[in-house]
Image 1 (tube, helix red, strand yellow):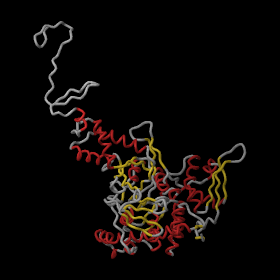
Image 2 (tube, one colour; image 1 turned 180 degrees about the vertical axis):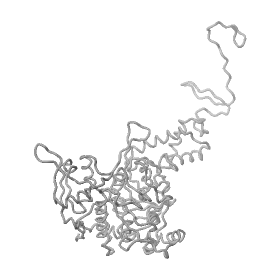
Image 3 (tube, one colour; image 1 turned 135 degrees about the vertical axis):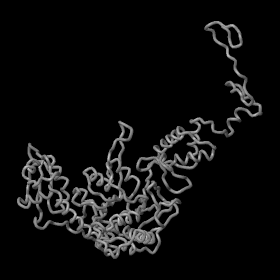
Image 4 (cartoon, helix red, strand yellow; image 1 turned 90 degrees about the vertical axis):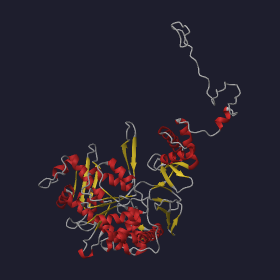
Length: 539
């Protein structure tokens, strides 16, 4: 055999290949211990490495540069929700998500192009963000608010949602518009700007836009003031009324006073996962035209009020879970009170809208114009009331608190500074709603009718299932077993107690230790009892 140059070779011998000579400008890397030699330009290899070089396209070097860019311009934080965020060192106090839309990933890619005149690769961006997430995991958690946040001295900060990051700081002494927030906020695609509040505050314009009674309007104002407080549970505002009472318009106006959004009204979610998407992006969530409340949704709404967590399997994994934990301010329209479970009914503020006289109807354009003109003064009036409520709260004492105790204290403070009666009006509305729930629930109604005859009853769930008369015809929701009867009684127990029925669950004394249900009427069956009216006590 012959080689490429015609030289004879033997089969199996190593073929000698020619190596091309270095082209002009190239320089061999010196061996270890040898001095660097100058290239054709007289610049050593060490000097070439020290000079800024154009992007070589390597993902490793790109990721390193991206991390360095981030540390020049941002600080990474670990939010109290466990997520990693980045905060612009010279910009507004807005916590940017690392990988979301308009988050750190997008901004780093733009900054990289501006500096190196080249686009970074997706792998390099991902590697850099992973490094930053690791740095955030080692940091101390910081509170990150959504629209509202509490301060260490008991005040409140309201994010106005403007590009420049302005906010309103509120405490017992007054409120002030600040150019830079003292606390961190996160924003989403649903965060729209609020108007700059304008003194003097005026609630009269809002009163003319919502067709409710005077007592109902004052309850609405109380709900709005409480919605600025991020650390308390808030009752679900439920707007009811016949067709033509402008429930959707009233809900839209109410929500946009607190947390304006491109989509202020949303449909009821299909499942828990869709709910987590719906609730995570806004402080105030309004659901329009809710025709029914499934058991899973009722439980989810209760947890959204109290801030309790829900555990779900993390996406694309088999061995990890995620905790969905939100405390939100909720509103709904068109719900049927008879469709509510007892525990959800205790967390509701019902507000009935009155019929609009045809001669007083206005077009959407007229309502929008009046609302836009009134928003700065209405917001200022609500902030004025919030300051007064914060000043009065430490001295408020309520003799008997309902289920939504923190909200009741806010109403009591509001009554102190205004002379209104929102707290008694709220407890009366809650009792009326409980009566509606009892009348609409077949098990609750059957328990109440049974106690009208026996007054007191104690026994097992099997005995109650056998003795409690079922309506004729039997409804579809009637329990099909003793276990189902026990669960149904537990669900309606709050509404029954609000109507003067004692409901207790205990175990039988002795060796049997059977589970017992105790039912008793505390008042005349012809006149259901109401909860005693809370009263103010001197501090």
